[in-house]
Structures are given as structure tokens and as C-alpha cells.
Amino acid sequence: MTDVNKTVTDVNKTVDAKGMTCPMPVLMTAKGIKEIGEGEVMLVEATDAGARSDIPAWATQTGNELIDSAEDGDVLKFYIRKK
Amino acid sequence: MSTDADTPDSMTIIAFSGDLDKLWPTMILSSTGAATGMDVTVFFTFWGLFPLVKDDVRITGNDSMTKALAGMNAPGMKKAKLSKLNIGGSGAWMMRKVAEKNNLMPPEDLLDICKDMGVKLWPCQMTMDLMGIEPDQMIDGLGQPVGAATALQAMSKSQINLFI
Image (cartoon, rainbow over all chains, first blue to last red; front, side, top):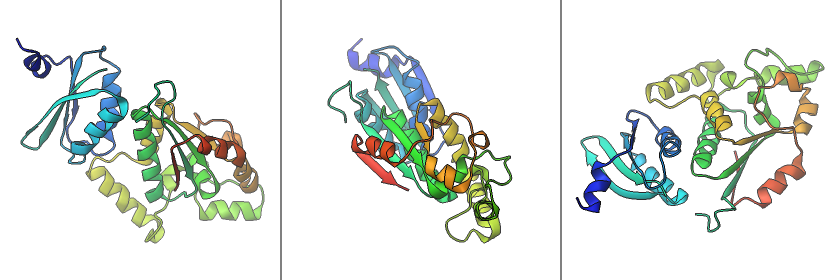
């Protein structure tokens, strides 16, 4: 298995922020990252359009790695590896 | 982004207004700042102090004038008015309904999150004295009341300083 596949399929935790509005997706992401170990991957799902820029901004600010993002209909998906 | 892991970015907000529509951004920015690892301080002064009074305290003040001022600025975050078109509270009520419909948390819930995330909530000592607001009338989880010099000290160390 390549490393890229691993990042997307091996999710250690999923944060469901669907239906939540600003600032909740970011607050839930911050809470979730505390619950996984270094190098582990968390999937954040959100429907708030603001999350499209907010989650990457949060990742940059905190130094966690946004390894991939995708859109599934209205659902925005962010894969974040804890630094 | 902070260049040194030992010194996180810092934000200080001077919460001057007690209006509902200004408490919202204060609480959203504070909680989000804490969520991004910032050291966040909110200094509540003048009208901004009334939302820190417990919701079940009907009136504050130690004489007729301070009581009248509290009457015009209903203590407690749940009683906060809109900055414009409050219309005897119906504006604030509508704003809260719209927020609820859009899954936006009320400011008092965001305040609880701020407390959990370690946001420093500093009441202004001078305003407490001026308005006759007693420490036991205020909500739990606040820092010690402080003055302007302490607020400025926090601001001088912050990259982001806001007056809301």
C-alpha cells in the first residue's frame, strides 16, 4: 500500500461537524486533534461553506498537516495528520 | 503562525459593548483563537461587564443611579440587546431564533467553551466599582478583576488586539 492510500483510508478518528456553523467546525477540529496521537489522521466532515477556508487556515496556524481534502456533494472532507 | 513553539500567538479583545450582536463576534473570535493555539484574553469593561453578571441577578448597583443604569443595560448575557432595532427585545429574540435555525451557538454557550479552552476572562475592576457590581453577582470561571495597566500589558504582548 502506498503512503498516499494510507493517508486517505486509514482514518483514526472522524469529526462530524455537518450542519454546524462557524465557529463550531474549527472548535470541534481542535477538540478532535487532542484525542489522536502524533502522526495519526483525522477526518473532518463539514457542510459550512466557511470551513472550506477555515479548516486549512486552522491547520496552517496550528502546524498540523492537511494531507487531503475532498467534496462529496454538500459535504466537505478534510484529512488532517497530527504533527 | 508562530515561529517559536514556546511563545504562542496572542490575542487580546477589549469587550466594551454589552450588545448581543457584538458579544457574538467576541465569543466566536475568542473560542476560535484558543482553538488555533493562541493565548487569548478578553478584558470586559464598561457595558461589556453587564453580560458577565449571572442571568438570575435581576438588577445590580448600589444606589439609584447605578441601579437605573443596570435597568437600562439588563445584566446577564441572555438579556443582551441588539445594537440596533432591538425593539424592546424582539430584535434580540429574532436574532437568537435566526441563529438557532442556522445552528449558531448562543454567546453564553460559546462563553462556556471559551472557559473550557482556557480563554482568560478579565472583568474590569474600575467598572465593577463604578457600576456597583459585586463579585458574587458575577458568573464563575472569570479571572481576578484587573485594571487598565494589566489589560495594556496583555495587549502589548499580543499580535492581535481588538476593541469590540
